[in-house]
Image 1 (cartoon, rainbow, N blue to C red):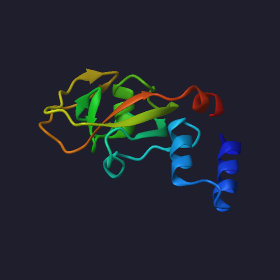
Image 2: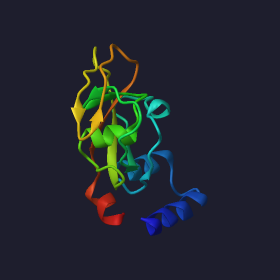
Image 3: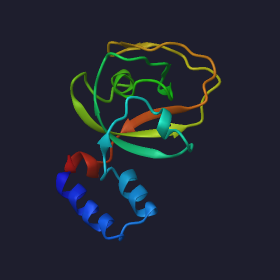
Image 4: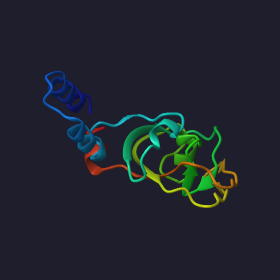
Length: 136
């Protein structure tokens, strides 16, 4: 993963990668960044996909099941969704989705999520790409 990141940085410094190129590399899981605490600053466009390195955690607020509010903890939601164990690291895809009318809470994998009414932003978590998993 480090070698890929260094190559991308080299091309980027020379102006050889545009925003679309970077987005395509990210969506393929080749530019996995450390996951943010929440998705609040990343939920600008429904359908946008991010690849993040997530360290599973059982602490942090989580609202929803399978689809989470934008202010939910990404690390705790990833454990709740069953994609990563607490303390383990995985490259996962986080997809910005249309918020449902209501977020239903549940208890899964040692993480209790809570119910919430309407919220402006939402995301779901999916398995990372094979390229990211192999490169990591």
